[in-house]
Image 1 (cartoon, rainbow, N blue to C red):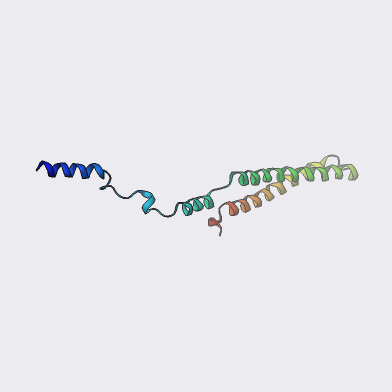
Image 2 (tube, one colour):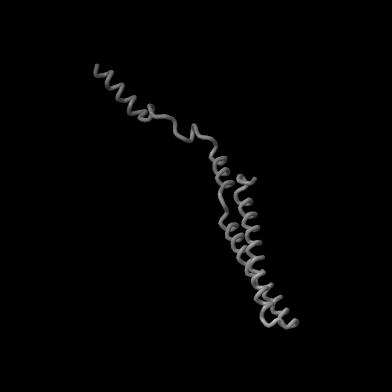
Length: 116
């Protein structure tokens, strides 16, 4: 009987992981396909930063362009400061509207699965 126990002990020592399920590598899908799927769903930080910075720069540019137009209106039409005040207000409104449109475009680019 001791020889049978010795033989079982040797078999157990030779294959300690025989009773365990297969390793994930053997039953899992191809790793490169999984990594490609993750890359497709991740947001590129540089692209996101560029889009958000562009929105801010676009807003400031709109306000400055309208302010310049208001300054010209004050200078050549003699509106006494009202041209610039109205133009800056219009520039801010136009900048906010353009920013709203650009954020909508940014979201559809970054998250195409939510596109209507």
